[in-house]
Length: 90
Image 1 (cartoon, rainbow, N blue to C red):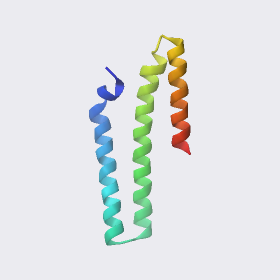
Image 2: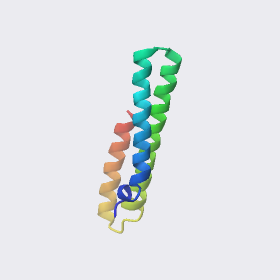
Image 3: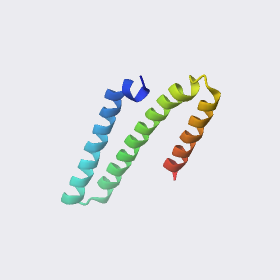
C-alpha cells in the first residue's frame, strides 16, 4: 500500500484547506482588494502548498527510497524526486 493511500485522509484535508484558502482569496479579490489581506492570503496558500509538498516528499522518501532494497530502483526514484524538487523550487 503506497504512502499516499495510507495518508489519503490527511492529504485530502490539506488539499481542502488549500481550496478553501484559494476560494477566500478569490472572494477577497472580488469584494475588497485590500493589498495586505490579499498578500497574507497568498502567503497562507503558499505555506499550505509547501506543507502538502513536504508531507508527500517525506512519505515518498521513506517508502520508495529509504526502505527500497533495490539499489538501482532507489537511484532511479532519487533522480526523479530530485528533478521534481528542482522544478518545484523554480
